[in-house]
Length: 193
Image 1 (tube, rainbow, N blue to C red):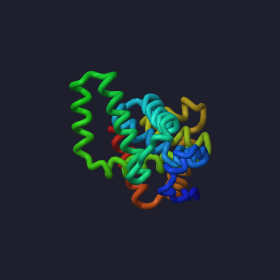
Image 2: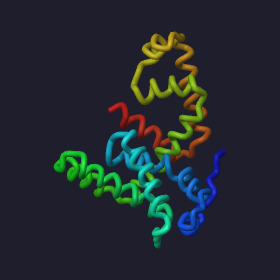
Image 3: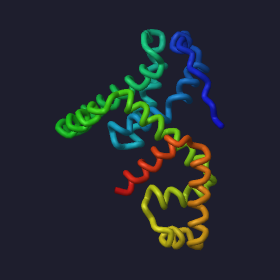
């Protein structure tokens, strides 16, 4: 089981002094979740990754002037939210942006962060599945393909598809808490509607 070390609240002081290991630690700790968070705003995963990377680049370049008075987590999510909104303002239709931002503002910021972290956790569990099992699970649950379609596409039997989906679900249930499993179920339902 992958247990993350707690974040040292003085980590920005270390980064300010040029500590690359501290910088790498926050990158590894937050990058994936921040990408999902940015995606909620920009609806494009490649752009979300690019924006999050730019936040980290900005932190490193401006590290000597860095003054952070809040928690590391709060700072990182706020920086990504601001970067995502700035991107939307510059690149997209203003009316659509205002509507999208207003819809997101209705959800409490803490809830957005929590949902993003849950999605990241679920994503990590799915990515840990064996390659073929993961591919079949994604085709079935996220792309909505029927067992017969998957079998034809991958040139395998329907029984193999059934077995691999069953294996995937067992492994996912084993690694996730009950709440995480419910969240995965809700995510799968929303993808298929």
